[in-house]
Image (cartoon, rainbow over all chains, first blue to last red; front, top):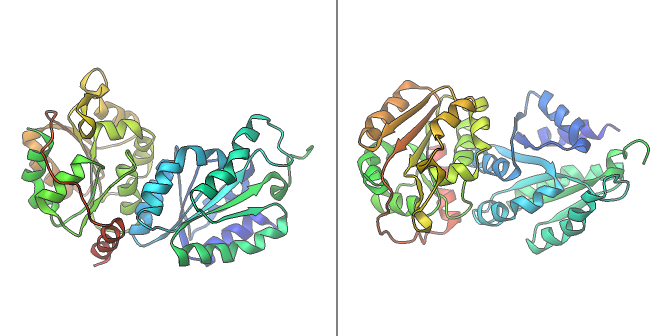
Length: 168
Length: 184
């Protein structure tokens, strides 16, 4: 199974037409896939809170948005999640590269990984963790759940899900 | 002129347009001067007005006017390259540049010193950047609307705030009526 294609297929099938991204090595394939889809407008952002602002505007403009980012961004988007996305009750699927988990080669990444789920739990953000490739089968239902509930929802995707770094 | 005097003067232009307004006193002033369902008031999240407005302009055809401030743009400078590379023709970013953080007690920002926001916007790739003095805001804003070109308008004015009540409207109500105005 090509998980990059599956994720992009599910986004399109759920009417997600506006996607902003801040890159991560693990996300390179899915970002490229999203960029190539005619049904998705892809706009890279320079920081994740800026990206969430773009998504809020796109939602109010009548489209379904999504953001693709790294888990370190939870550290810079808490205010935006609380005072924009949650406060105005907007749906936002967040496909998140979960750095610092099993098969991670860079030690510093662990420092935010240990806080990631706790921060998301503190914000009452529904959170899913993809560890095996087959976990991607839930992505379609998670997208439906996100737009039904009009909440930000986190999908944490670790290195094992993406196939590791080759030698790890 | 101070910001509230400019807003009073351009209220007749703003009334029929989609407006995304910056957090704090700017939103309080606009709300008190001429509340409209087509105004989106930011109640939190400093810095993101320009980004919210850009997302809105990219996803529907009506003109979008963002009322931003120098302090807020400085806190989200990454927005300028994103605007410079993506802004559609229905996007107007109006930065009321009074050289101060108005909502927090008029502490000076760097745009009152050496920093040139219009120059930064141009360097970021924004093609149409116009800097005007406060008294010329209405004409410049109308010209930007008429031009059909993505525009960054930097309005130089004096520092100061009008005393206006806090917005107590529920954010979900603000969002709901705004989305209805967008789709009407």
